[in-house]
Amino acid sequence: MAEKISRWTRFKRFLKRNMTPLWAKRFSYQVFAFIVAVAMITGVALYAFTKSYDERKLTFVDGFTICAHTGAYNKPDNSIETIEASINGGADVVEVDVRQRPDGTVVMGHDIITTNSAGVELDTAFSVIEKSDIKVNLDIKDIKALFEKRVFLTGIETFQAKEAKEHCPDIEYYINYMPSRIKIFSEDYQIKILNMLEETGGVGINCNQTYASRTLSEVLHKNGYKLSIWTVDKQFQMKRALINEPDNITTRKVKELQDLIENWGKKK
Image (cartoon, rainbow, N blue to C red; front, side, top):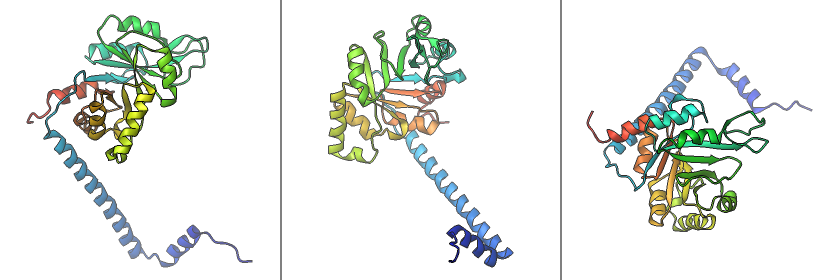
């Protein structure tokens, strides 16, 4: 019985028999030219889109906020340093990831807390926060807790909404969702999103910047809901996010976003 030869093996044998130095040189050149062409087209397209944003008038919804992502200002994630830098940097909101130690102590943390000494206790964080007017975005990872009126929650999945409503009846919470940028033009899909928000009790959608769109923003605002976008760190992402008129933008680059807003439309 003849040995079965894979396609990759046959392809390598073909190259060995037929690839002359001249053929290899031409093939390499064609591959290189193709890569350069793709890079140039991508670059030109990105420049064109970014340039088009600059020419549009920038408007904001009432109550628009800039949220400092945990770790903003090049500080450690979920640290007092991040909170202090966000306050001093003029951010409207600071994000805090919420976890629970094995003994039940509520702390700042993104990943699962496995010891009773890990993480900064949330009481310590709020002792710093309460000395300022900054708002707090509690990104709930595994618990629900009741805090002050200037707190709002993200990180709430649709299946967690009932628990959030029960444990946090007086706190606004966004529902984590990944809306389709294509389906959003469909009226049926828009109704599906609105029904989801009504059923979950969320004040709006919290989504990655790649899923946000002007159409989504308009549908939500027209029906009394909000849009929160994360994590917006690059300039072209900031421009696209701002054009979508969200209620909140979460970024590690707070100063860069503030400067972009301040200098929007100004000739350089």
